[in-house]
Image 1 (tube, rainbow, N blue to C red):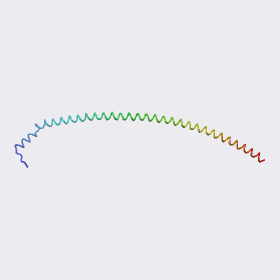
Image 2: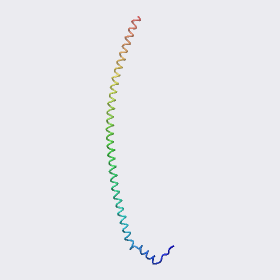
Image 3: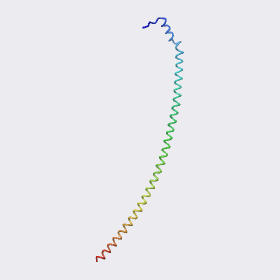
Image 4: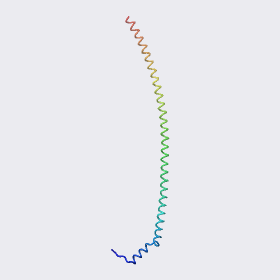
Length: 120
């Protein structure tokens, strides 16, 4: 190990004394403060950008919700129209079948009368 003389030791001690280190620490401290302020400034810029992008996404979602609501309402109207058409068709078919059944009963009765006459 290298030996340090008393004079070298005192010079090193003097170099690290508060008088000589204070300006160096002050400069470093001001650099840290400036660095901290720069980071805070950059964070604000980035956070404002993120907030604006989140707002754009929220507006897009709201727009899609409105379109979906309109589409759902349109589908409901179309389904009601289709259901009404089906009910109308069903009612018409029911009327026609009832008429055919009544005519069939009438034909059966007439056939029965004719058969009874021919048997007698």
